Image 1: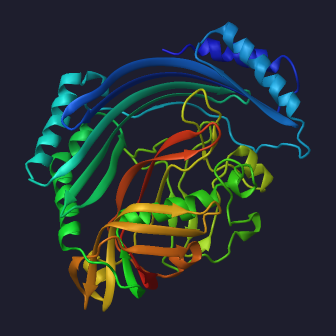
Image 2 (image 1 turned 90 degrees about the horizontal axis):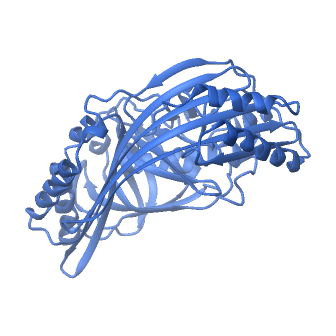
Image 3 (image 1 turned 180 degrees about the vertical axis):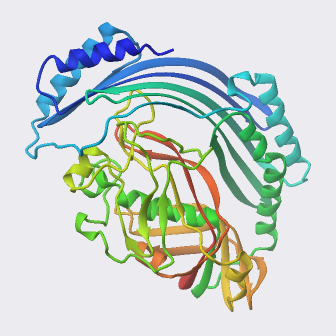
Length: 471
């Protein structure tokens, strides 16, 4: 149990010196278990316990952050001194302000029906073994088979000088798979990830002993029966995985307020969005993208961010208009709005920064078969094997992993490595229909310096784009 008196003693030390805008203290304990299996053999297995604390101090002219992998009153006092010295030395020309937020006193936790800590290493090896055997029974030639299972439980206590006190417990579990299929002298690779907040029951819901054999059979079919798309203007239906990566990369990242004001420019890039673009049209009326940390069981779940601000759904693009940015307290104040609970850090050694949680295209009114049925000539890009986007999040490219030709409203043979190159307004502006059913994929989002990897969901329904260039 994290000691509340250590956090409060550290806060008292911070408040005894300079006139502060804010002082924050976070204590954290983490248990992590990892298992990797390569080509049917255990490649690595580990179990670690970690604990530490951090202090963040905000002055009108600078912000200081210091952390340590020890929790004690003496260490807390030392971190205060380091963070205060850092904040004083910053000497920003533009004075810092923070959005006014209510203080919070609460406890929250994600409950587990089957606690992650109760699952033995033998049970985990057996699960991965069953998955691997199911893949091999397909008789598909899978030259590369790699599966990694990781689960962790994070206990945290957060306190700030405004009276906020939050204790939390968050268990997460994830499985990543890599399968390389070869046929006829050619190869295709599938990289997939499943993740959730919760206990072992989440793993049992994923049905990986059926999903991964189906995946390798699909890859073989793409190689054996697929043909290239003749370059030209066609209609395109994007599956939830493709809609999700587009939502994450060409909406979520460019709508991060720290990126918009230039703080991320030398780290993860810039944004084509400027502060005065709220209300500007970016897509059709069918283009609504939401970032919602409150989806139960989601990989990116949290009810309060790491500045103690209550989380809520953020409507980034709303009916085709740029609606709101992802904000923390500093960026929100700078832009004349409140924080919308977007401040996150990977773990206690890293400063919280503006991050996404679960970013997805909002569902629409169409059935899946309606999306395809009205297309005379086009492609269904169900999933992707490759993507890239420029540092302004404007010009982007997606290459299909699983795709099929559409002719007169019917699915045809596989479309091998279909390529969509398009701009952000081009993608969102071409949407003329969105289906009802929504699906999510787990992912790790990288950002910051030092780099932080953050648990997120991407996803959406099927979206239909009219008259886009494919090749």
